[in-house]
Length: 377
View (cartoon, rainbow, N blue to C red):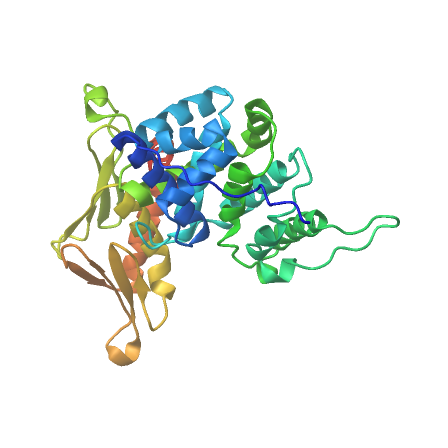
């Protein structure tokens, strides 16, 4: 006579506080962003009970005040203090948000060098796993470029494992990144970094921080980008904490009859005023870091944008060909509708002004300080 099955699941009814309900909801949203699949709050509560991992609740609590949490993480990272596993998970989640949402608050994909850093950081953590957990290897492979998912050469006396396939695929993707002709943009690579930190068996915080510290500068800028995409705010102390903060004036530049003036804003913010020749009577302002970042991209891309023109979050523009009365360079701000038309030769003056300005140490330092707050926009 068969023995009765004693592994029956029990239903547990628990009354929770409003604060705990909000924590579980934040955790549910994180789970949805990771997999794209719907999940219930009760399922999240079940996962928490089964995993018995305090760091997962810490992650949820850190996201309750994301700006304050990131400021704390930045201070620790810049001081060389080890981050907790939960803090690394928060960074990895925001890195994923920033990479996978390029058109929410910014007009460009992140750079190839930044994606290389994400791949390298994933591989560094993947090789730290404290047991040969293979259940996620298929997921990791699926987020890597298809052309990199090839079987590695066999080694004598060594059976190829799924871990070997993942390691080989990451290294192949890194090798292809050095050759533009074979580069394939791995937009889902950040999911791997997030999942390996969130789910795989790993050593303590000191080992994790030691492995990821070489990648800190770029990982931070990507996380700051993700924070801006998510919140629309830079990672910055409150305005009250910046009162009385003095910044030296920024220089003005001229290029023929064109000039570029810089104006300080609140804290470390600055804007530009582009002055066209007096006969045009046009003074064009570009206010705030996100618009400035896009305007610099526009300045380079507009003259070679092709028949479809160039489109960003804040500006659109293009080059009108000769058969339609050109060549004429044009651009328009989306928020105020102000349009500017000029010749390619005149636009070259604008480009040179911007190039000269961002080569100056004072401008470069001011810009780099803003990049730390907004990330790679």
